[in-house]
Amino acid sequence: MIKLFHAPYSRSSSTVWLLEELGVPYQLDVVPIRATGGAPEGYREIQAHKKVPAVVLDGVTITERAAIALHLAESFPETGLAPRFGDPRRAAFLSWLVYSDAVLDPAITARLSDWSYVPLGVSFGTLDDAVRHVDRALSASPYLVGDRFTAADVQIGAMLHYAVSIVEAITPTPAMHAYLERVRARPAFQRREQIDRELAGA
Image (cartoon, rainbow, N blue to C red):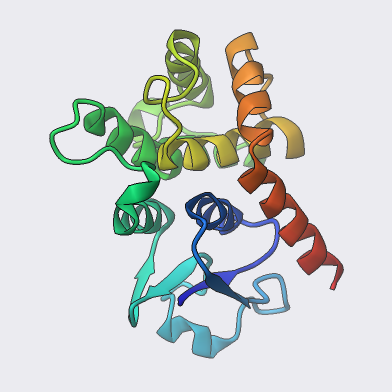
């Protein structure tokens, strides 16, 4: 069985969402990342920086959200959450899968933290540029890879939900608003919401 190291209402929530989309059995191991000093020191043996998520599948540990999302989606190809090799949509899928953590997440963090930086001097640029890039894609099609929901939508959808509805770092464009309505209506997203609610209240 898949084991997910998770903290409610954290970056690992997107991995819970993905697992619910996959519809496969999994076990949650809750990590107290918000405790004084963060997660227990022994957790470094699983995740070097004591962060979540981390996943154990078939006895092998994998970390980093984009890597986890790709590995899980490709481990269950019958779900259709990852375009296969040879599919012309695969390039866009991989690009969006990585874009969430490489660009969108740090750009949101920079905005929330009021960082002063030279956009050309950092790898992720500005949040305004990221919003324009995402909006162009969502104005052209219902999902990031055309008319097909993929694991990339879990990654980007989770970040947009956080940025728009939780911390209000982004004012959604009409295309983003419609997209969020679509992805938040998915049963797997709603199950993830319930799981985090229950864990946070435990």
